[in-house]
Image 1 (cartoon, rainbow, N blue to C red):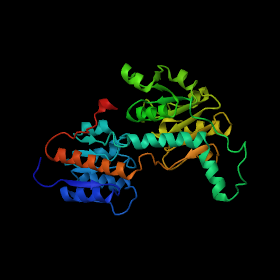
Image 2 (cartoon, helix red, strand yellow; image 1 turned 30 degrees about the horizontal axis):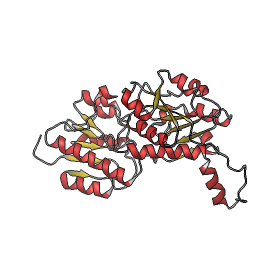
Image 3 (cartoon, rainbow, N blue to C red; image 1 turned 180 degrees about the horizontal axis):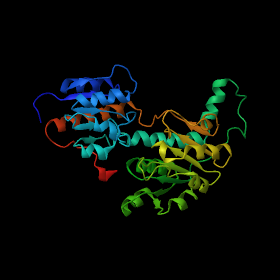
Image 4 (cartoon, rainbow, N blue to C red; image 1 turned 90 degrees about the vertical axis):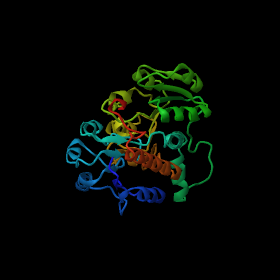
Length: 328
């Protein structure tokens, strides 16, 4: 590696402590305002930077990577998901990609439980009544929701976050079921009291609540498509704090409008900020603005991992969180 300080371009505003530390270690170009870079600006940054630090709002495709300068050798993603980066093309160009895994596990799992409770206990509906000033007082049949204890929770994707969701749901007395590419080890299954389903179709047809906790890959795109959503029970609920592309949002909106599903809790959306209008005004849908990982502690830890990945690379070693194509 060259002895000069690395040139690092950061595409979004990061916590002040993270930006300060990056500036101490590297020649950093920081973002002045907290808006996504244009495609043109991203390409220009990739033409001159040794290291690019993007976030999930930066879609870096093969064409953009093809225009990168020969000095760009690391894309140190600020976040765990890398579906917005063409990792295979980057590898072929000799550009390593790193991420920040494990940091937001607990934060996201907490948010999954918040979505489950929000939908099943009708919390946003209650808040709306109180904020409007229309509450007429307690009534035996008002805002009746469902008890979590004893409900069957089907977790789609039993990685770090899925397992953390299972532990939390277990504490609520829920029955844990899961579908995953690989079955968990027997001792892990036993600790979670979790039932494995080889068939996703069979699992979703029997669950009271389905939680999406798998990444977005070509094989998981619309994994919960119209056919599979229709397998769910009419009184079932679906929540998603993973990636919006896993659910066919149009099909979900139609089913919720028709009363074919009891509710949904979403923190992510198939088309980013372009949320399906059918979902916006339904009382049985809880919508959040991608808040799953939004804790001060998590954002700082993500920054620390980015710094470690870049520093390790600068020292001539592979970043500890390098993303390999075989991992995707």
